[in-house]
Length: 289
Image 1 (cartoon, rainbow, N blue to C red):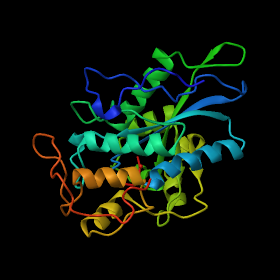
Image 2: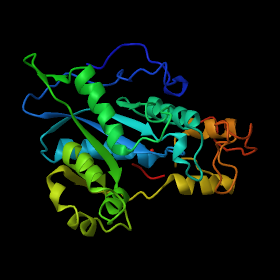
Image 3: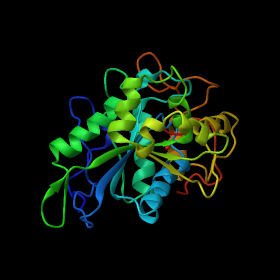
């Protein structure tokens, strides 16, 4: 069963008040022969889109219908910190809150972990996965099998095909990080139009047994970059991102400036009101960013 412990908002946490979110994490297995699995998606999520959320559902279907060795117990969104300094990056507080709104109102099993976002320095993906390994397997003790015994939970990275493309490009990732991420944890990759995934995988043969490619049966190429462009042009993004996220963006005046970060030197968001109105504003994411 998932924990019934009270939940502290991810966007309200600091390094001093941090607590690992586990309210939707199922730590009891139903299939003793399976390896328990938790998926982690790292990214900017500026803003989170329906594709970010859809990736988790596609991964869940892959695990369920492809006779894999896994039993999926939970999924986490881990937004990058403000120190990533990427154009179009809203403050971590805003991105955490948007992820919370999306996960809480559209999913019954996804959670948002603020640990990476609230760190005082940029955290490489390998260290973020180490964090989940520590919290789930060391602190919580892994998962419980039907016979009462405890078993190690596999932590795996969930990402788009563009990640594998960068991993296969010489000089972009260190060999140590590749071995740490792909060798120790493994990754579930969602195919994306325009990415030659077969060519990318050819350069990653050493870890082929821990790379799981998920076919995108219904093509969706929405990205946070395109959403920001639409917002700057005052175009509708209804049905591209969750409605509560649209409302939050409107209320906080996010993504108004062309190519600019929404984080100032003090880490505060710019703007009070977007001045944009949605015809349905009251109606209800390494990732595409």
